[in-house]
Image (tube, rainbow, N blue to C red; front, top):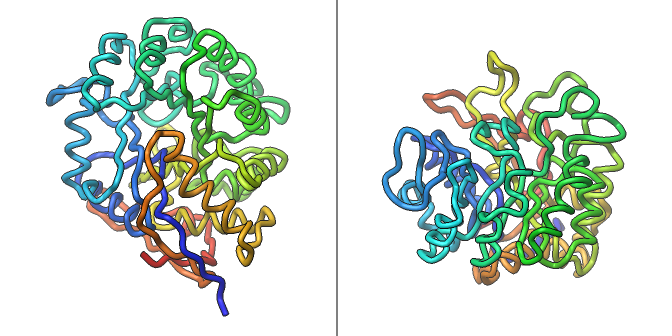
Length: 366
C-alpha cells in the first residue's frame, strides 16, 4: 500500500507570479499544489517600488500589484505578501508609511543586475547602517535578501572554493547583523554550506528559504548537456553544498529553514543575451521537496519523518512571518504523477520536471 499522509496547507514564501494574462495560471498552479499563501516577488516590469497608487511607467505599487494578484485568483490564498523592491528611491518615510498602512510586511534586496529584472538594485554597502534598514527595524519589516555579492567575475563569481554567495555571507551579512541588531532577515534561496552555517549560527531573527532544485541537483546536473531549464540564480552548487542544505532542512526540531520555491515562469529560456534565470515548479513543488527529503534519508513511513517535512513545508515559514499555520490540509501520496507544459500565447512554460525529464514519484490531493 502506498504511503500517504496529510499536512496543513503550506506557504511558498518566495515565488514569482509575474504580470499579464498568464498570472491566473501561475496562481492556479500554486493553489492546485495545496498552497495556502505566497510571498510574491516584486521584480516585475516596472518594479514594485512604491507603496500606494496606480504606479507609473517606472514604478508599480504594492497596492496596485496586490490588487492584480487578488483579481487573478490570489484572493483564494489565506496570506499574500507583496514585498517592496528596494531601489535608489526607497526612503525611511516610505517604510514607515507602508508599515503603518498594513501593506508593507517585507522588503526585497536585489544585488544590482544580479538576476532577472534586478537592474534597479543598489549595492548593499549603501544600505548597511542607513535610515532605510533602521526604519525596517523600527517597524518590524522583514528584509528578504538575495545574498550574492554583485560585480564579481570569473573565479571570484563561481569557483570550487568560493562563489558570489559565499563572499556575501562571509563579508556583508555579518556587517548587516552588527549594524542592525533588531532587523529580521530571510536569507533567500540559499545554496552553499557557507550560507547554511551562517543561518544556523545566527540569532533567531535570521531564517532562510530553500528551493527544491537546490536540494535535488548539483552544478554537474546543470552543465552535463547544458540543462538550461535548471539554470537559476543563485546557481546550483556542489555536492557538499547540497548535503549541507539537506542536513539543515531535515534536522529534527529545526525552525529556521522553510519552503520558498523561487518558482519563476519563463516563456522563453534562451534569449539573445543568454539564458533566463529561473525554474518553474508551480503545481509540483511539494512533490519535488518530498523526493529531495527521501534522497536525504527521511522515512515518510515514520512519524518523525513526516513531522520534519511538515515543519519545513507548513509551519516554520508562517511562524517566522507571524501568522498561523493553515487549518486546511492537503494529502501527499507515494504515487507517480505528471505535470504538463503550459502553452500560452506568449510561449510555453516548461515545469522543471519536464525540462529535466524527471519522473515525479509523489502526487497531491487537495
